[in-house]
Length: 139
Image (tube, rainbow, N blue to C red; front, side, top):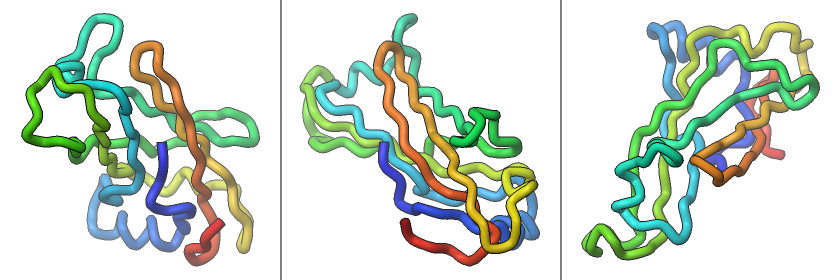
C-alpha cells in the first residue's frame, strides 16, 4: 500500500466538507496486487473483492471516526492480457470523509498518525498518513 499524500490538514478537510458530505479526496492511496490475474478480482469466499481497508489511530489503535475508503479505479499492468495472465494490478482508492472528527483533539500545530490496514483474504499490508491541525506537510 502506498499513498499519494503524507498528510491531510484539518483546514483542507473542513473546506472539502463545506461543499457537502461526504468529501472525497480522489486517488489518495493505492494498493498493489502483485502476482494476481484479472480473474482473481472476481472474488471468492476466502478472498472477496475489493480488499477491506481499516483506518486506526497509530497511537491507540482506535477507529478513526468519519473516514473510510472508496475504490475508484483498477489499473492493470497489461490491460489487454487474458483474464488468467498474472500481472501487477493497482487499486486506486479515494478517502471518503464524512466529518471532521478525525481531527478532534489535535492541538494547533500538531499531527496525529493514522494507520491504514489493508486485508484481502490472507494477504495483508499497511501504511500511514497524518492528520494535522496545520497546512499540508511532507514526511
